[in-house]
Image 1 (cartoon, rainbow, N blue to C red):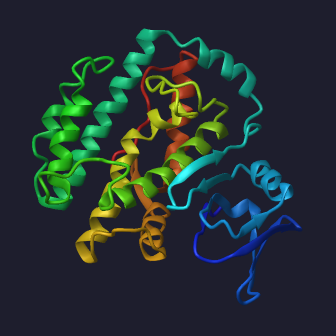
Image 2: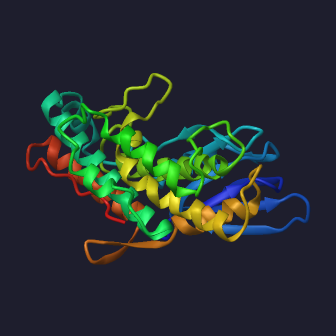
Image 3: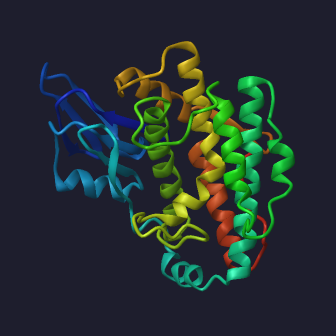
Length: 297
């Protein structure tokens, strides 16, 4: 599987399924492209002039792909996930729903600790200093009762882009535009890995926001976020701070997310690493271990 990410933002197109291929026809010049559905990981639809049939949705789900729909500002507003991605999913849903609070807290401790460690590494690469985040990561306790995650975030964001006033704000027209887009694609990758492992993305270990349909994806993507942050840092360092999203910015983010990363001494895709994280959660739920396999970037 190639794990391609397709973004339909600027050109009107018609999508069809022909012989297990996604048949793409761009309306302005009648250009036609065919892509094996088995190679597709994520499809992003941000142009209202992109039309597709039920067969497209069905085939994407059958092959474990994720569909993201965006609003007029190119911000993701919905996501379609496959529900039959694993033959053990019913029993795993039941086990997942019965996770005890102590285990949830222990798992969340690992997630937050690794997120802060990865943020520290990203800061070192970006500005040459971790701003004390490595030490802060050692202070994370079960369930993160002291909210070390938030403490780390304040240090991290004030340093990452060279602006001490920078804050994460979904509505801001600055680096946040790229972060929003990158996180949405990352979330889809992680959600896909969760489904492929027979888990339900709505049953989280920490997040329980009623406005989010995929709390578990929000949980497990946390240590992966610095991958997006570095992609954004690289872009604004070499180009500009965007006031809107264009194809250039999106291509930069997607290209970075499709790169291979070192994980346990091997070069792997983000989806592969996310699958390993999800499978380690399955082992924890089934009582085989209490340790998650989390990314180290």
